[in-house]
Image 1 (cartoon, rainbow, N blue to C red):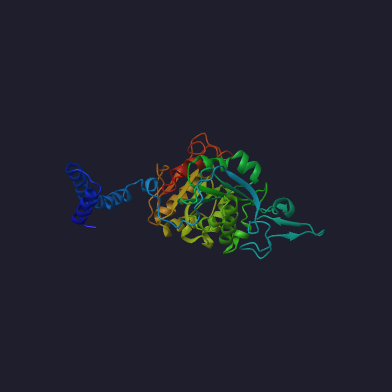
Image 2 (tube, rainbow, N blue to C red):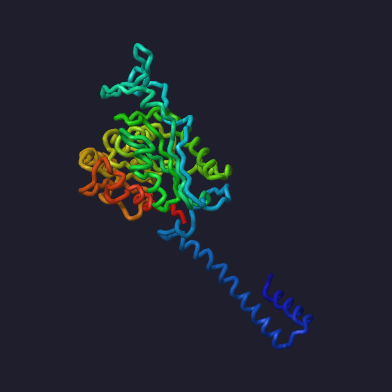
Length: 364
């Protein structure tokens, strides 16, 4: 409505109410000022929005645009489950990649076993029969905000309860990072020196796995409408030690496509170095962090050489804010040990620290 029309209507209304000439003048002045200020405010608002959108802290002010389906607010308390999933890495009935033999064989008595590439024999019912996945949603997680799915691949001689949950405190580190992230940590070989990926060797298996994870997380979240949101969360793979094997197969198979936003190797660069170098060269909008003790120092030097030969710049320290495209090859503190690397690497509680540095996913 034009300013002149507004003034006319305001005058007529004031007279009907029996206002004095002075009151009518005040009313007209107020209406005139409002009319003059409104266009200026309308011009300033998009300018302010553009200013915020070009700042380095956009996500802490204006969330990244993304579909919002669930309207449920932040989770009032953390939820953690050990859940058996059909798509978990084990049990596995398929073949060994690169070998003309099944993963599981049987002895004369019919007892089933797997023989590792190093020659160790492990019984299936003791090492490869646990389909559970450690799932965790932190208190305050908000499905309406941009979020991350952290896939944690444990190393050798580990089980989820004793090592991932209790000793390494992985769910606690995700929670205290204040990142809007959820966790899924599958059980691989139980208490074994084996980096076998099981079902995740097969193309499409990781896609099926994260889809089932999304379904379970939605149930834990309490709002079935949240499942599509969980099913589309960007993914960061964190591999510790022998978890490098499944992480490399996740990249080879390409099941996550552009959803895979980052890979973190925690003293894990024991093999498949070329796989990671090729991946960061193909994915300029993803990040890679590899940090190490003396046990993987030489392989990390090789990794840096391969990456830089592909024209990608590498950093030698963890950046204050981890951005898309960052590649960092970082030595751990001098007192860090491989066994306790999840408790101390370049700093204490390294998973907590690195998630807090990833730009774009504050919990609120």
